[in-house]
Length: 469
Image 1 (cartoon, rainbow, N blue to C red):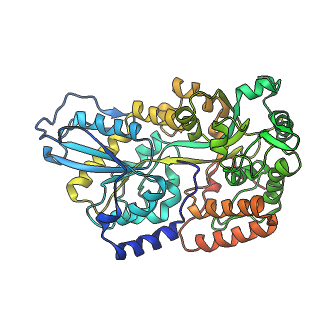
Image 2 (tube, helix red, strand yellow):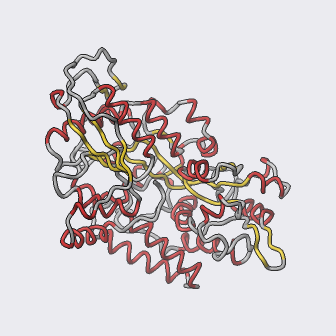
Image 3 (cartoon, rainbow, N blue to C red):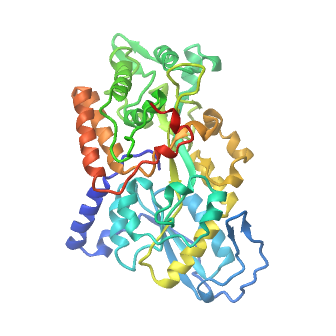
């Protein structure tokens, strides 16, 4: 999930074409893990199941026969969250025993090579999870949703950003953004309390120094480690200064600017001047924080669940990313991005597509299961019916972030933006490249890639877009 290092969509397409000619599809797609109901699907002869209609405006009526009640098996491909997504498949099968949905979980990097290959024929998964950074690469294989768009607009936020020629091929079930994670044990040991949680970057800088342990020139505890996430923070931080990431036409990136250069200089000064961390100390900042080598790190909401899973003993807290000046709200605290609802394979057999469309309506109207997904990934729910859910509001990440109102979504950003921003920051941190040179190279590469796509930023749809410089 967001944010990650994504394979370029253009590169993925080229790789897919090469591999398709080099080997059979079956040989290319070993499945990492597969789960689903036991015993296989059984014929369903009961249309009226006596169940209530789900949903508010966008609804799902379970009292029907799917595929005329005949047994059918679908595959649902994903790269994470097997337990949470399998819960949807299992709940659906309890209603429609003739429809078995086998959940196939694969590693992220493999997924984006194998999926485009599989979708080229009618043997691929009927359902598959989408990440919008691979929008251009995957959309040609997606069937449009068979739903009432006006109803969807009423029940979900951000629908208009996904409409293409009057149709949608995926939506968002939740929105994610970035924040600071801190080690509470280290925080206390440094004499800090909750009253010291920084609101501004200068306050943050002072706190990071207090949390740093450097004895005799040997760093043993980083006050702040961003070695994995610096480029993600950089792509969001400039919004705080009132600058959009893309130009007014929404087709070219704005990385080689004075705002971004200043933001990158601030980050590199944390290491080079303040000595609160080092590119050579805890190269993977996610692991370094989990292993107790770093007192603070930046990441997006999904990291909360990862920490709970991989490092259950760590006592950590979260707080909103600091801003330039206290008092007034910035143009935006950060960018946000949507976690996408599943895609439907347009090349799947008719019966499989029918079942997938029916399952999609079930997915969109299953509030309890959607709530669990949002809790798993620390998401602002896109479903209006979950907007005031007490469990979500009580989640530590949601409490730290407050309202989604001041987070901007630039649209389904192609992977090239993050890929090249990551390269630029790495060149500065590890190779000693000059920031203007690295940012200029990244901007040129991104613009060249964007010119080959239909991408247009939706920053203009942001509620506070009129405040942009």
